[in-house]
Amino acid sequence: MTNDHKDVSKNQHGLPPMLLQGIKIVDCSTVFAGPAAAAYLSDFGAEVLKIEHPDGDQARFFEPVHNEISLWSKLVNRNKRNVTLDLHHAEGQEIFRKLVSEADVVVENFRPGTLKRFNVDYESLRKIRPNLIMLHVTAFGQTGPYSGRPGYGTLAEAMSGMAHLIGYPDRPPLLPPLALGDNIGAIAGAFSVMMALFHRERTGEGQEIDLALVEPLLAVLGIQSLTRSVTGTSMQRQGNRVNHLAPRGAWKTADGLWISVTVGNDSTFASLASAMDMPGLTADPRFLTNRDRLANVDAIEQVLQEWFNRTSYQVAIAALEAHKVAHAPLYDAEQLLEDEQLKSRQAFVRIADDELGEALLPNVLARFSATAGKVRFAGRSKGADNAEVYGSELGLTADDLAQLKTKGVI
Image 1 (cartoon, rainbow, N blue to C red):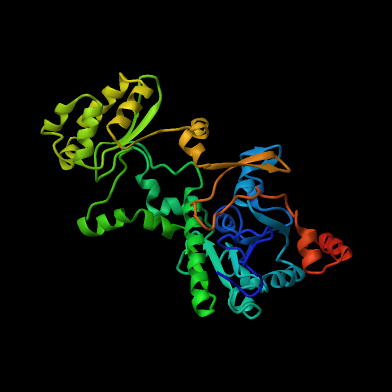
Image 2 (image 1 turned 90 degrees about the vertical axis):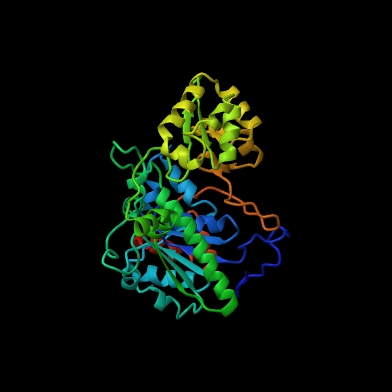
């Protein structure tokens, strides 16, 4: 994709361009979903300018913190230049408009109406950048009775039905212990921006994107609403089980490690029976078909647990591998970083960092044969690029910057 302000035939090193080289994004969103959406785009070459309040984005204060540096900020603000700017000031709004005048995309997650109060809403900005794309990220969307509510990805996880389905039937619902809703929303946001860029490539037209974090989760959980509408029944918490196949879950081996196994069809169940040296299981009327195994799920899970209880991790892995049973180790973070498969694919990248010394970050989402993405650096310190962006690029003098800083604009 190309735009009207940068030659994308080659990059500064004379190498083939990254997929989104030449695309400029202004990211004025906070915390996770919006910044992560911009980060996913930056991984493939988009030039992202992160704008945060002079007091700092909330992500700079969330745990875990190491040496007073939030690791969340290092993750979600990777590959971005960083400037500070307070949009409450008229001077800050004017600077923002100058930055957007050369941008392709703006990512924001203020409450609906906030940008209009700042005089930098989409209709105002498109007067200076007619083909601008703007991604709005909120918990509940720009319209509807909940649109004015404050929200986080956690609330989207709750409202979507996700939390209702996580956990065991005799225990309360569980919310994921990580920003799952935010990250699913971020991937959906990056996808949506790409669709809008594709549309603009065809037509020359920009547009607004209204992303409610709850809605990508509804797509992920689509079978629950479809089931309810067709059968009148609602899915319930059932631990590691699912409604559509059995056995499926995680089992602890004799030496205290965990393995996950999924049996997707009857032939795989036969392979599992052979791996456990129990070929007679396939003739057991309780386990003949997937429907039979679902009806007798307690019984088949007990068989697996007894086998894993007397089998070491390495022996179990070898047997499952030899019989081509779909399985995977169930890792903690330490085991994850030592896995040979993930090492071979460079699933994590270790990069130098001015504040942490080095940072280990997940690699790009997908591998492209011709336009590879890259994690180039972790999130930068607050205002690290003020001098370059405001001075070298916008032409403000050192005295201008000093006055703006004194006023709290930057």
